[in-house]
Length: 90
Image (cartoon, rainbow, N blue to C red):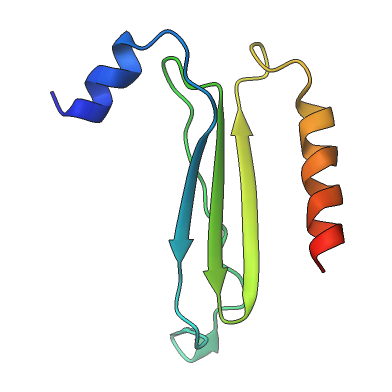
């Protein structure tokens, strides 16, 4: 078993996981059509209750939040706070 898998299984307190991926700066094309958006998706499992994924692509930034709704009852507050922070940055 790899180290991350072992930690996820045995760690009782894990705060949000964040992954930040740098995508291409130039647009991609698929069968001649421009790819307009790439949306990153993460999974939450075991002790991880919230995962943030961030991906830059061709001058844009996409962020997704995946959460265990049963273990994160204040998810709407978290999403609202993140939206406010992004608004303040732009």
